Length: 113
Length: 115
Image (tube, rainbow over all chains, first blue to last red):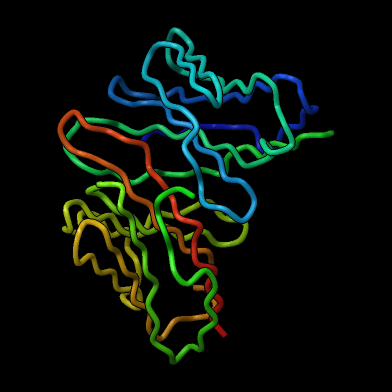
């Protein structure tokens, strides 16, 4: 799987938007961009994923650069419960079978009240 | 509650013990996974099962032995572990194959301490 690069940590204030960047300059045409997060003492949970177009769901938005070499996870209004480690993961989806996720170190998001 | 249940939540075992971790999902998923999360390290994929068949083993030592009797249950049998095997062991499941895709759902993990 292609590699992703994320800042080690970011800090934001409660009720403000948060933009979490991810670089993936070696992304291939079949790689989907996935974001997961891991809250303290819990297993990771899915946040959002996309291929080329920007995506929105109830948790967040995903903005994908036109050349797909970077993406940004947007939390529109951060709460204290959004404090977690956020992982940007590329996964090739050929529809052929199960592939595990390759996690990096992620970004530790700190939310200040 | 993610729909993936792991037991036990905590386990302390001696190096000569034999124990098993259990994972169960009733989400209709056909793929199940074991991950290891050590302190200060990223999650590491250990094993992948697809339709009960093991499709990936990431050079995991033989003291870890997985078993997948059906698509809903996954076990990790442990024997003669070392203290450095102490970690959080996470199970996940997903739907795969054809045009079907779901994200991976993770359990809460089993915190294993080897003494």
